[in-house]
Image (cartoon, rainbow, N blue to C red; front, side, top):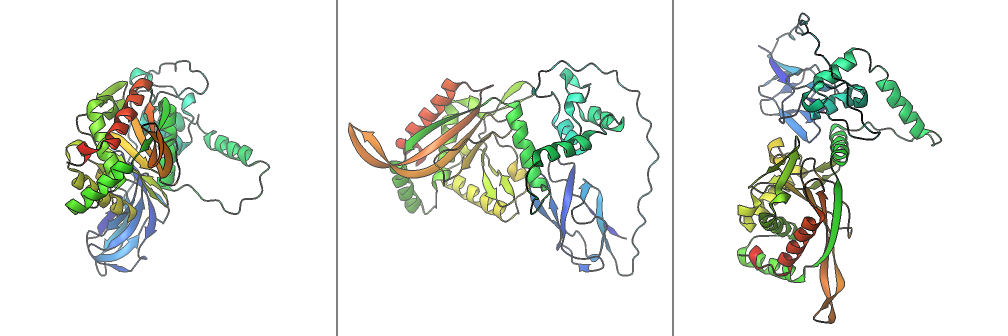
Length: 398
């Protein structure tokens, strides 16, 4: 019997994926456990292994989008015919339309209250959410609203509007040398970052912190414990300890509620050629520094090799983003989280100590917070405690 090759569900919110590459052609033999295709989602690239041996028959073309559990191809036994495509199901009777409330008046540029699924579907169908009437709880637009709007034909101008907008942007520019469609990961990053900016009141604070003593202690501790620990590992541990005193930084804003967590799960941003992903180190406050370093390094290597799983990128409550080549930058919040710490370059700078000017290694930190949950004075307190801990680092090196 033919073995179906289906689009796997690689995360709680995944609904579809892109067949970015087939590793073999139709009619070639595939061994069980052999990588048969590469899948691309909004968050990661994934190598799909064959669950059985057989002769490959490709159904989905490279670059095509397949819904979760949709058939991408088959693995056939010797001499076995390709299965007939499944027959279309009879149309399902639709429920009576729900009475729709008029959408509340919004000022131009205001975010449209909607669920994440509705926003994703609207982007896919080219629907302007501002034109959709909400039927969901608390006046939010849900997926059914978007789908109904699209099927009614009211959204037929969506693609035309997008093309017109593109034409306006490109007007007067020279002929492009190349046009590349956004990949699933790149598009996902763009959507998440844009949604984050729209849904939050982001404010960034910066502080220069002398780290000469910290670096000395880190190197001593690494040698004594035979455990390679970097500044990034120490910064993650320091953040977790400070968050213990300031729990508002370990919160997620969702559904109009601030959700507090006891477990500090820190995401450490990793740059890849195709985009940025954030592996998550769990329970950093209660994890020994050596284990934090080991786990962070393992996740970073897996991310760089394309072998990280969705579960290893889920559950973050706070994020660190390291850009060691620039002094300062403005990190953008992961949606829902209340804060993200940006780590800039460490450079030798003059510092006043005891009335004298001395040269010290200094690192610039940028803390972006959601002003909806974190006030400026509290953000300043975080950086103050963080700076004091880095300059008197005994608690970091037990």
